[in-house]
Every structure is written in C-alpha cells, then in structure tokens.
Image 1 (tube, rainbow, N blue to C red):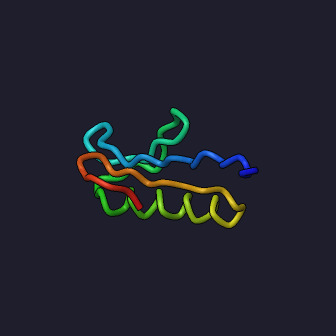
Image 2: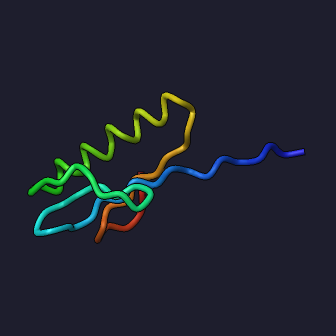
Length: 67
C-alpha cells in the first residue's frame, strides 16, 4: 500500500503593484522592485518549509518549469 503523498506548498513569484512579490495561500508578501529579490524571498520560505519535511514548489510568473 502506498503512503498518502503530501501536496506541496506552492510559492509563486509574481508581478504585483509595479514590482515583484511572493504569493502563498492567497497572501502576498515580500514585495520588491527586483524579481531576483522576490525569488530569494520565496526560496527562503521554501527552505524553511523543507526543514519541516514539507514538499515545496516555487513558480515564477513568465517562466516555464519549477524548482
């Protein structure tokens, strides 16, 4: 019997109010003018979730694939 898979937490980096932000569960945070800074903020949040054993995805608006 297979163990139930835990769905991943999804952190989205998207354009927001003239800059870039991180969206998770409908909440917008970590606003920045630079896309790279928003990606770094999403990565930090994802790493924190990984340390708790939670699978994660980071999706960046306008890019294909995920990491």
